[in-house]
Structure formats: C-alpha cells, structure tokens
Image 1 (cartoon, rainbow, N blue to C red):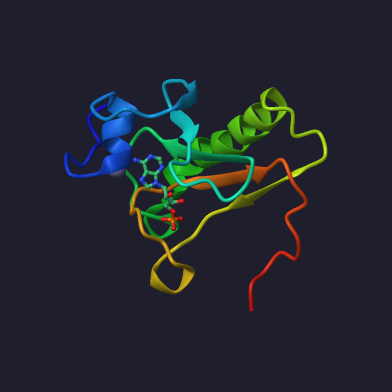
Image 2: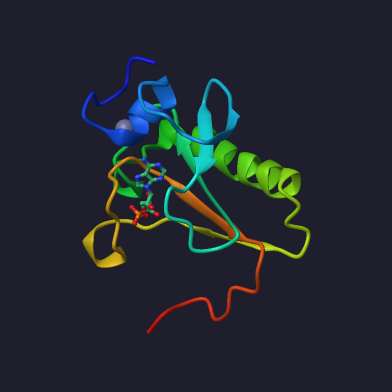
Length: 118
Ligand code: AMP
Ligand code: ZN
C-alpha cells in the first residue's frame, strides 16, 4: 500500500507495524477491535489507504467506502450481532474525531440507547 502516512497509527496497524487485534483484512480495508471499547463489540473498520476523514473522500473512493459497509455487515454477522448494531463515523473537531485516518465504528452487543448525545 503506497498511500500511507508514516506517522499515522491506523496506517501502522494496517501495515502490521503496530499490533492490532484484527478481525478482518483484505486488499481494501482492515477491521480491528477498538483499544478502548465502549460496548461489548467495538470494532473499527478502516480503508487500507490513508484518507484523513470523510472530508478527504473523493468520488473515486466510492467503491472503497461502499465496501466498508459490506465489511461492517460481515463483521457484525461474524461477531453475532443479530439484534443490531450502530455504525458511527466522526468527522472533524466538533464530532470529536481524534484519529485522522477515516474509520467507521461498529458498536453492538448491548442496547445502545438514544442515538445522539445532546
Ligand atoms: P474517533 O474519536 O472517531 O477518532 O475515535 C478513535 C478511536 O480509535 C477511539 O475509539 C480510540 O479508542 C481508538 N484507538 C486509538 N488508538 C487505537 C489503537 N492503537 N488501536 C485500536 N483503537 C485505537
Ligand atoms: Zn493512516
């Protein structure tokens, strides 16, 4: 993978330079358990190429971004989330994004409550 940022922790996990508890990997995306889970299942699904956030997504990335959803569904199924799950993509400062490598949170394994914190 050539499109990586050597300083980025998620690029390091994708490339195997930093340990990650990986649950799924293919040529486009990688999924691994969040290091600080807020639900019984808390997985992050990331593109293998470095895109900082949704703000960096381009039309050419549409197949990749669509694939992230297919992988989310597969991982949810594999991890037994038959009662449902939530996908979250924080984008930018006001959303509390702290890692600037695009990622989708997959949350499940308990009733998650109201969708939005006020
Ligand atoms: P966000 O606020 O959407 O940027 O969330 C970043 C997420 O990355 C947080 O839930 C962190 O717990 C998680 N995280 C940070 N470093 C690691 C890591 N090395 N391995 C797995 N998850 C991580
Ligand atoms: Zn990265």
